[in-house]
Length: 306
Ligand code: G3I
Image (cartoon, rainbow, N blue to C red):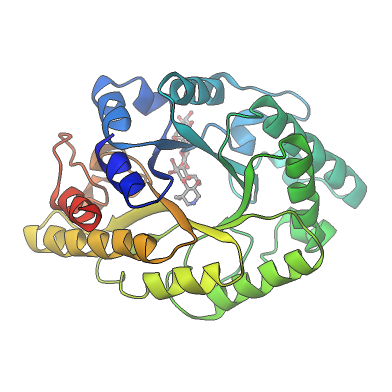
């Protein structure tokens, strides 16, 4: 692929995109996914509500399709995500026993990770567990199990696929501050307890004008001794040409930031075209426009890799 080939020439593992049946089954999306991207993250199809809507009843139609598409094209997959307070079925959030929740987490993690053993480069094992002040978010997981829910999930994932890289993933890790410090401190505690963790994912959902602190922050995260990855990159903007030019510059800055940090393994954008972004087309956050034409943002990334 084009951007993927160029980032690999710079020593990185992949340039990736979110994908799912909606895009892999749309010809123009599939063409771009295979031309420019070397890794896919399922945007929704591996989440808890999609895979275990009721206890012990698993559905894998959409996630199987995404993994099969990646395998057919020789691409990596980032599994997303095993334990998250959002898109969590109500049968999980209404559990009241720590012992039951432990079993439920172990069964969910073991079932998903085992199913795709050998086919997943990295799993986002725990997603968005921090508050903005760096403390642990009050989810059903934290309320019943404290911080140990993280240990339980990572240990189950490692046992099910010892070769997969295991990540903790969060947003607003783009600048110094209490959330970044909280992540560094949490990773330090996990490592001290022997929790099997390999990487920190920084989602990098940002707005134009906010890319300048990312290289330094990636290095701060990498200083924990773990790999780091930019996992859900998009840059909220507007469709005006001035804002799209700023966005192009910001994409170049973010792409160069990963190149500058040796432990940064790759970059994933959160979708292909502005047409399908969760942020809506009005914010024009991605590299291709609603007509699947390459934007200045594409040129920004391309120039960072050239
Ligand atoms: O599948 C249902 C469909 O049956 C229903 O008719 C439709 C009506 O609303 O909703 C569909 O579900 C939507 C789902 O996307 C699939 O399209 C949900 O409403 C919608 O909330 C969901 O949004 C996703 C969001 O996560 C949910 O939290 C976005 O697509 C997805 O891009 C977004 O991704 C997250 C990452 O996983 C974690 N980090 C933040 C990022 C952006 O929010």
